[in-house]
Length: 209
Length: 284
Figure (cartoon, chains in turn blue, cyan):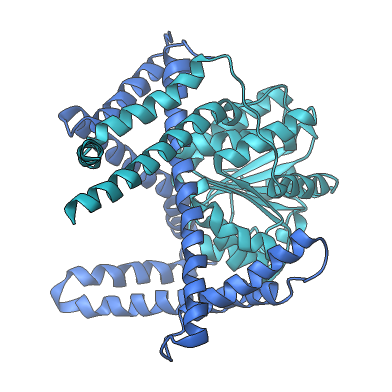
């Protein structure tokens, strides 16, 4: 059994979180609040140490009227956000929102079109129908599966005849996809449990290899 | 038949705590049995290592973005440790950064561990740039300039005083970018940086997010993938076979527990469905 006090604290808190599986209780509530408080505090300190102080406050104090004068612009935008909380100036925050949205959308729309749409379409179209039978079958499933799944979302015409068959096939493709995702979710959660039990049995109690 | 339907009705209303106990026992038992499981590396894991081997032959350092916190450590930590051994045992240099505040402290610990094992020198063999905010802009911007987004490293040292960073001006100066992440950051890397700037990119993700990345493997936007704990176990197996790791790590140690737990859950799904259909007949 471990003699490290940090291991003991972690083990007791782990048991506290596990106690929720029986029913909600005060021990779990303490652990929950501890996580929220610690996370928020840690996040604030990291932001302060890595971003606010060295990247904004320090340069402004040292050279705010010189080469770092441009940093007053983000400070001004921060104040525009804060205007939301004062009745007379509350509409001013829209300027900050507009600034933020324009930059964010300007960056994300073209990059998403390139990386998420065009590259994927090109990848599907160019899937080669040659090689071993397994490769041909795999690429055929890719091309047809993508087409059927897209047809499922085509609502401009009533799903009848060939379109109905294709959209039904699309439903199956989507269901297989959801099934794969769900099984990966279970796998992921099981690994988290494994990690905690390994910690309890090996690091804390020392009874498992 | 009536007996079956009564049993089915009881099963449908089964206390969920019974399921919890069953899964707990299924996960716990393998730790006490002298049975060892091994993972067979899948294609995406082999691709990951092949791309990394290619990068290790370059003089340029590797950029590793680590984005996971304590909540997913069980799945991500074995993956990262295997990767760190792979990089530092080959004597290669690496630059680290994170876009998650809670990842900073674990990264410092991992790197301190590697420093003592491989006798590394900070600033020359590796650098930790620390936490970076505004991930989208930083990922995009690093393609043009490091110094515009990072003025100092995690220890507060200006970048121009770090020997390793002397020849690193943009992502063109690193051999490969690797993202070990428990969130959607690999997708953001692909969107904001890999596609516009064009460089080799590898990712390790939780199993939850893994399915999202297979299409990117097919298009070549992603050169290799470690998919969750399974991917980590496969990578550990691969590195043990290559003599990089002395023995399997925590991901492989969990394989037995994972297998038994999955069979238990599969059993519950089958029993639950049978009970549901029997019960539905009774309702009619």
